[in-house]
Image 1 (cartoon, one colour):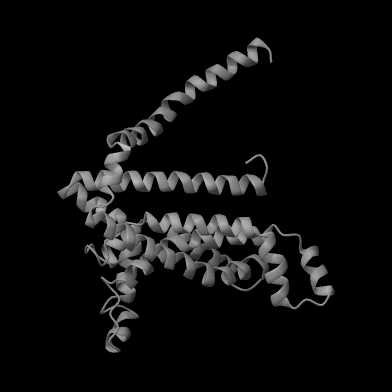
Image 2: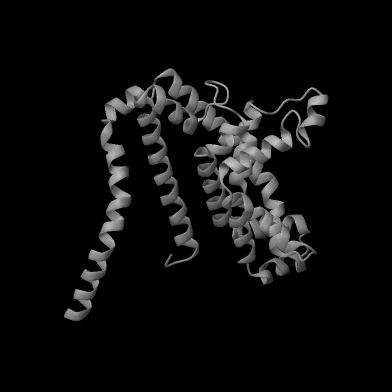
Length: 265
């Protein structure tokens, strides 16, 4: 490497430092606020435990529902041609770009007591708003598109000749999908599932509006942080650190999956 190239690299690094520092310092400040012992002790407080348990239960359910229902939808859009495909694809993208508060209001107007669908459910004795089911629905609405888009990319990238070879050998459509398509797209599916779980874990706006913020019933970790900021800042910091560490670990995992699938990413 010549001196000119070396100096150019240092100039680029110097210009990058302000933004990198701006991103790093808040995270570092949060991590340094509590010692590991303080964090461990605080994590045992009832309000934090309740929020963590509820978050794990609801996000796990959300991710499972997304995989079961989102995989066929992703396969349909990735492989089939049909009228309105662009509209359907755009509809899946929509929850990613709209504000979570808009998603919460939309869910409330759809499934609330006097909502488009909720009025019929209410007549049958089914109440969804401000329940754990509402928490899962809010998470599902905002997080499922991440899995669907990742699965679509995975299915699209598969060499169709491999699937056709399995069909020529006598494999049924289901066995071809199960034994060829899914294994070949497994990294994309896993990455999408992880991102969906993380997005559901951090969901706040739609949950607040549609499910409310009731400790032990609908109060997930982000909602507990919001309440802790007003009542007990120590709780807010503890949960914030936990979510920060989890999010970082998940992003690292997803990046490694992508690097294995797409070298150089």
